[in-house]
Amino acid sequence: MYCDHFKVEERWLILSTEPGMERCVVMQTLYQEFVKSTILKSKIERETYGGTKEVFAQWEKWIKSKINIKQKEFEQIG
Image (cartoon, rainbow, N blue to C red):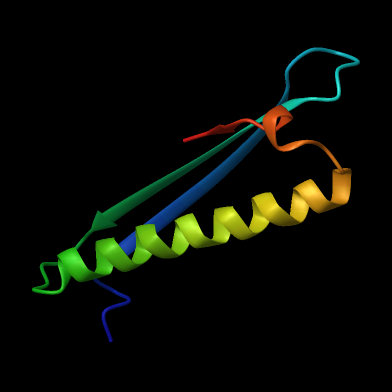
């Protein structure tokens, strides 16, 4: 219905902090561009950003369980 009104670009960048270290930095960016006017712009933005935060939280929980690290050793940048 409103899919032709906006574009969303999401990027994930995962970098090693130092060679041989068992740490990494995860950066997630989200860009939303409206190409047509819509009265639902604020709702679409709110839902998009809210959904992205939820997905990142789920991913963070999953990756922590897979690599078995302590909470304080996992740094989220965002």
